[in-house]
Length: 508
Ligand code: NAD
Image (cartoon, rainbow, N blue to C red; front, top):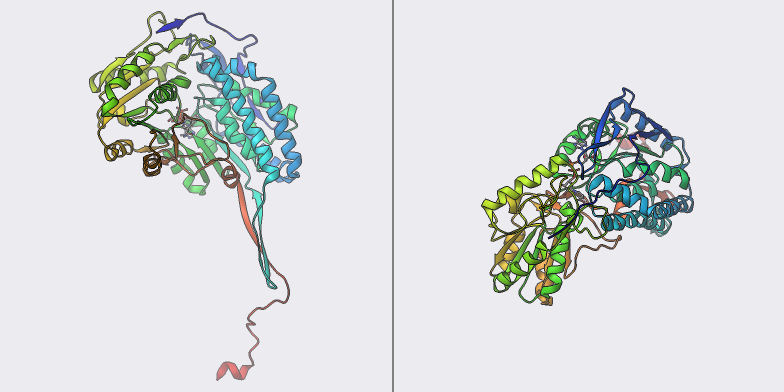
């Protein structure tokens, strides 16, 4: 294990983070604030406005006015598309600054934060293109009827996002919501409000009208809760923990809101003996240790066929021990600092628990030479049984379990033996097994002999406790729009005529 220790502080770091409502940067109506820490020093570097019900009400009112009276939902698709491409240009132009701020706020390694910034721009380009290519169904009943779909934006969308890749995940919701013609209120995660504060300038520069994009910072139980319960917000798109999703689901019931939920995961990576072992090791290492392991689709349970198990564990652990943990801004860093001391304590709790639930073969605590900050060594537990808590529960840090299996049937049982069903990774060169096994896994997304790369047109989402609904490509547009069916008679109207019978007919 190597470490990099020099600390980096971005120039012109804001010390005050505000809401953005109706085109203006504002504090909370009641002046409430919360403190924001950086994960390397765990010192407060900024004070952010803590939104309350009154701030959410103001943001929803601005968004509602922009939806009811404004130009945004009524623009020609090409006009809106041009603006979305201008947003993508602006994001690309600030890629370095964005990545620098994101890394400072989240502790993600800088090289990986750059990738997230590029992906955020790509989300806007993709939905800008999809918007002009959008076609809707029309059905003709010859000589009788024409039926067509009148697609309409639903209204004000409430977007609630987590801290793990904040800017990219915000773009993942903002781009399709805005492409659809909705107006939005974004409530970013309270651990990481820094990069979200760039959106206001980006949207204004690109020509998004005031009131279309609104941002309210704050705690989930305050700002988030008020957004979920607001009667003028018919849609909630949420990414976060499964238990938070359940709370939001309950709180949305009174208004029967449209819900899209991307929740937690504990995804299996299954390595068969016939796999390309080197590729499988590269991928399963990257799959759980990239983004500091704070990745919803992390392959955090590796299942390995018994005949290659010892060889795999030894080679995997050796590589895990060689991962460079260090200051997130150093380009050599592969694993940075976890987002917040609370999350660090949670992950460290699982590391300690793992020592009694499995055989520790790499990591197991804080890296030597990094006494401050939320650093955790890449940690590998072998021989983990399926009833262990470290096998069942989402840790959301650089911690992985390895478990042997003897047959395809056992591998499938183990893969499906948790409440989650977000992603799965399968490594085999047997074509038949590859497809039958992948199709039988209870997961929304399967990567076969591949690490986590995704074409933006494909569905994204989990099954079981990992989510509700699928976004991705046109499915995201479907979420943010209503498809009104319009039925038109062509030719003569043939209606059975009530009230035309003679009185004699009625009595006979
Ligand atoms: P979290 O559930 O704690 O918070 C997510 C967001 O919800 C935050 O903005 C928070 O303020 C808000 N929130 C909290 N309580 C709320 C309430 N009662 N009402 C309304 N809003 C509320 O999640 P987190 O710790 O920020 O993120 C980590 C989790 O996100 C992990 O479980 C991870 O798997 C999941 N995640 C899933 C995906 C996916 O696509 N499936 C992607 C990234 C992260």
